[in-house]
Amino acid sequence: DQQVKQNSPSLSVQEGRISILNCDYTNSMFDYFLWYKKYPAEGPTFLISISSIKDKNEDGRFTVFLNKSAKHLSLHIVPSQPGDSAVYFCAAKGNQGGKLIFGQGTELSVKP
Amino acid sequence: EAEVAQSPRYKITEKSQAVAFWCDPISGHATLYWYRQILGQGPELLVQFQDESVVDDSQLPKDRFSAERLKGVDSTLKIQPAELGDSAMYLCASRGPEEKLFFGSGTQLSVL
Image (cartoon, rainbow over all chains, first blue to last red; front, top):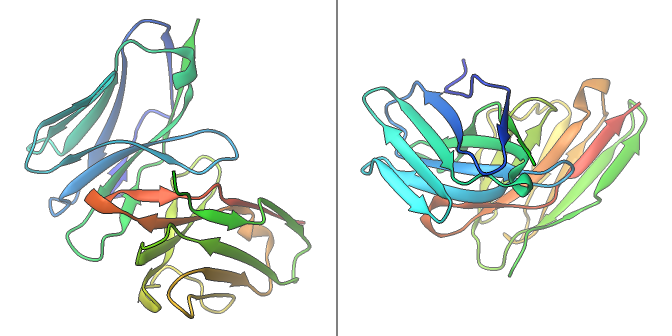
């Protein structure tokens, strides 16, 4: 039972263009959503987050959008840079216990 | 910037042997997590500690896995005996403000 889903295993984008990574969830009790970035053989690093009471959060080149009615969130990276190439995980937190539930990840490749 | 420390970075073992992983969270972080990530999948929670107490170990295979955090600071995860299917990256994380989890670099386990 996958509560957080990232249906695109990979995405390839040209440098300077926009990257859009998508994430769907099934549990309406999730109250916080986070995006993590992971390089091979390293632990995930926090990128950006959004509370369920908001629909948008922006930090530099990164913007996260939340559509609660559709149970969907997306991460926009503008402009994309080769150094953004990594695996991106979407994660959701329930209102009990604080654990994060992760999606399967999307591997982003930004080509020069 | 403070980091979550994990050791070893890599571990190769034969099946039926015992292995142990160590984690030292960021100072002052009361909540500690052990996650397991299989290649191509998202991290999955194995166990969550609040100080020295286990909060959630529902996904921990207790016949072979054990975890402790005796003084509420650093933690050890043990597998005995290791099986081929245990090959994965084992990630430790501690929880900071605003629901952010900070991950260590992980231990890459290969069971032969």
